[in-house]
Length: 231
Image (tube, rainbow, N blue to C red; front, side, top):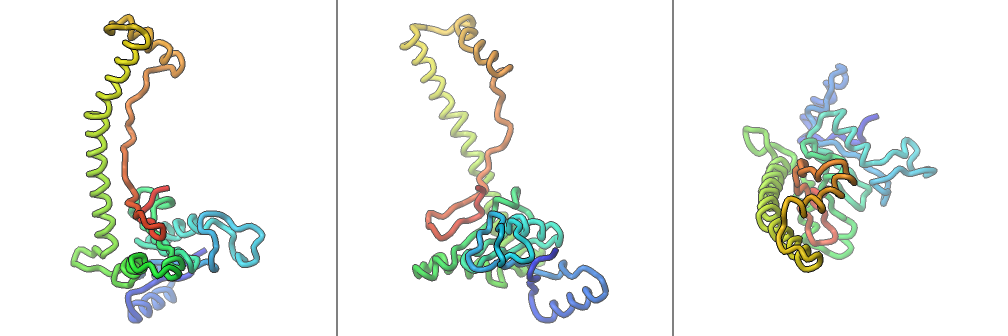
């Protein structure tokens, strides 16, 4: 079970890959990306049952492309049904839900120049080719910048929640206790009356959130483009 296409930088690399294949050696390390193409308009996030057009498999295409990425160890994978084009990466935190998507058919139908430019920018051959001695390409650079942005946003959210929002919530709680329950000032005893029902219901005090808040999608407000989204 292999992807439909392996995409190479040039004809010379492709021929070298075929030579390796004849010698029973893996040729995917030479590929810039892999691609899996479905029939026009095929749903990309669900199985297709009782559909003759899926003669070989009715599996969920998004699951398939992830399996192909893992199996071939290629950095980037393209999934398309002709209308919608998706770009998946090996290094993202959640491969199945994080991808870059352009509705190409919609962009062409509405002459959306921005969406078309995004398509060319992210799906052109040069986007997959190394641009420096480090081997990093355009897509690697975009992903690194997106990750850095997510970390920065995480820090800002932490400051906003714990240094600005939390005090307001506490003030609101104190005001509610004072006006609605007539408690002028809190004491260990009055707080125990409030906390005890919570501990009985949950078994312990509410735990601190330990899972980091991440922004794995920087979504455009344009309906035809969804970028590194995490559903």
